Image 1 (tube, rainbow, N blue to C red):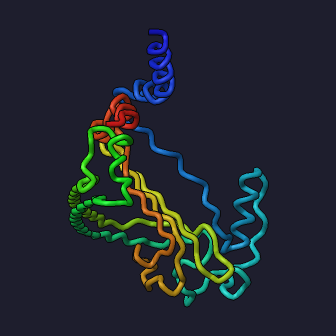
Image 2: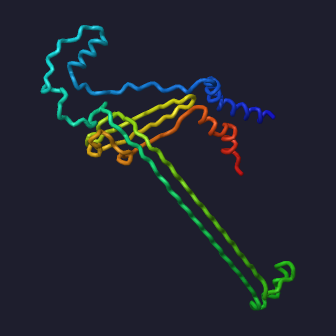
Length: 249
């Protein structure tokens, strides 16, 4: 009885944090995460100094001019595709994967063994003293074996996601490739849907409209999920999950 109570206390303590969190959110929609502070390059040095002075409460420095040909200024004919840290590009996700795998295995084996000892220098007459049951030397061993195994497996998988989202360039690798990461959250009533995309892209693969396909992202990590009342209803209770993990049969 004490062991049972101890096990129940351990299981309750392990799930206490999750239960307490769910009880605290009863009747409330799931909270959206805070927006991260992205690092962006300063294209206009004078504007960057003005913003820094404004945050410190100082008077903004005098503007040195609005020439388009000074260092760091924007250009009419500059490529507008993402190329630097903080730039934004559009990621087009069009996942339509379908895979069907079927395996069938059948194995059968039969074996028969016969062993007789009709004569062996007269020693066969002494077998009755060694082996019980007065054995017949001509029928010492007679075995038959048969085994059959059949296995069948079938796996069917299908995913389809069609959406477009924006991502930020978080770093530029030495070879010029771009590290990107994008996160999008949409909350409808009491259900929050979250999409996260990250990976490595080549600047050459970015289209003229500053977009890229998910199939052109190396080391792509695409996460599509959510949390809320619908997600909780689709998940098994923690007691059933523990039972499935521990029950050996």
